[in-house]
Amino acid sequence: MTLEIKALTAGYNREMSILEDVDLTARHGLVTVILGPNGAGKSTLLKTIYGYLQPRRGEIRHDGQSIVGLQPKDMLRQGIAYLLQGRSTFPAMTVQENLELGLWSLRSDRQRRANALDEVYRRFPRLQERRSAPAGLLSGGEQRMLEIARLTMTRPKTLLLDEPSVGLMPRLVDAVYDEIRRLKQEKFTILIVDQNIRKSIEIADYVYVLRLGRNSHHGPQSEFAARLSDIVKEWL
Amino acid sequence: MDLSILADPGILVELLLQALVRGSMYALMGAGLSLIFGIIGIVNFAHGELYMIGAYLMYLVSVALGLPFVVGLGAAAAGLFLVGVLIERGLIEPLRQRAGREWLLDSFVLTIGLMVILQNLALVTMGSERQGLASMLPGSLSWGDVSISYDRVIILGASLLVVAGLWAFIRFTDTGKAISATAQDPEAAQTLGIDVRRIHTLAFGLGAALAGLAGALLLPILPAYPTVGMQPVLKSFAVVILGGLGNIAGAVAGGVLLGIVEAFAEFFLSAGWQSVLTPLLIVLVLLVRPSGLFSAAGGRP
Image (tube, rainbow over all chains, first blue to last red; front, top):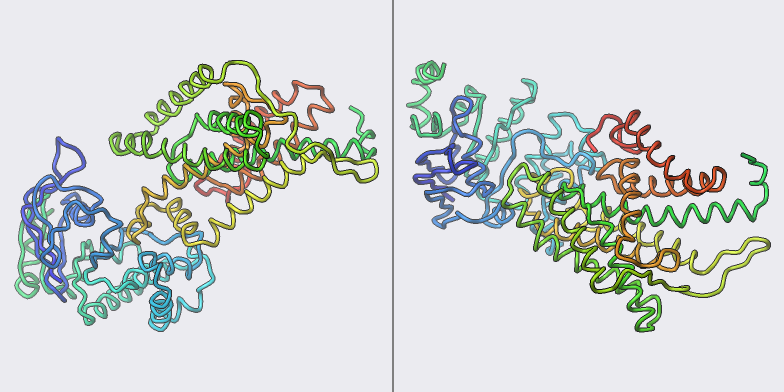
């Protein structure tokens, strides 16, 4: 599933646009990384794709179909899942309840729900061990794993990841990128917004740089890795 | 103050019953207010008027139409659920859409305005005189020296049943878990496909139904008149502060606690003192534990 964005303009109020004429394509089965200094509009771009923010102009197409005007609650059914920046587990609920809520959109299909839960526990045995613990008592790394596990339970095609490794210690950061690599092998279309430039370039196929809400550079990973230091210098 | 009087089981039981009957009203009101605040983030100043409509519905169904009291209770709960759904869909949600992020003050104005409109609507349609119900079910349950009127048994039993039902609904059903996920993190709930707008409507409907049921249950004790909701709503704000805003179990515990404090204060310190003690208790709680007596220490309410 390819995600295509054309001439996207969006903002939180009428007077000011955060994004201006942004073009971006996240190709099927590849990792596309969006880099840029603070305030470049990276997170706003993901929020606009997911329907938290309605664009003022422009197109967003997933698998050729326009998804502009849809609400966040409709996106999983379109095959798009979203990892929010920061914590997004429900701390007062158990690990299992958090995972079951990840299957909310399949709640009428008991069999599929049970299978998806079995599968996620096979893949993340640590979550099975802690299934009856409140999510708020998990370590930071375990919570991130829970979020990533919950993200793919309904078998979406495209994943939007906002700062997947932020706030984690280095060893756990590696674990998160290993997990993203695994998702890439499984042919998910992945769009990542990241401050961790080095790590995200390593797994990227294609890179976009945003500055002040506009496209600044883009290119395949190989071409980009060489120019990296020049581009970062420009931000400073 | 002579505490030896409590050795008389008749008096002690009478006092406790008074306390629990009041407490169950406060618990129903407080739980609804807390549910609405926890999910939608607004303080419903018109909550007392939902109580008032419930009381009038009970009056119309069981007195004017002469139907069994159970039908009146059902009509009040179902009717107020519908009223709540209409208020949320027709007034609150449109305001939320338009006002954007800083809509707290706007929502105050909206619910206070609604309070005034509903009171005056009641005045025009129902008149200002008190309209009550002698009794839901005459007679009483006797056990030695102690007797409990059937009305009190019904009030306590129904409140307990409804509060336990609400708790089980939120704790164990899929929809209930979606409600509690929305309360904890609405943005994350949406990424899982939960329709937060529907959850808002459901929460307001349920909160309104609890208020309506409280008004109906209490009709034999507190007859209906246009501003009958003022006292219950002030008390339920107290209850919600005691329990922690958004904390439903805390609101129930706070309701029972306030009922006990008031009943005993009235008995030992003469009527009127309860109106001093309640605000005093609130000030103390706000000083010592601003997020409520029953909240996790330091946690967000």
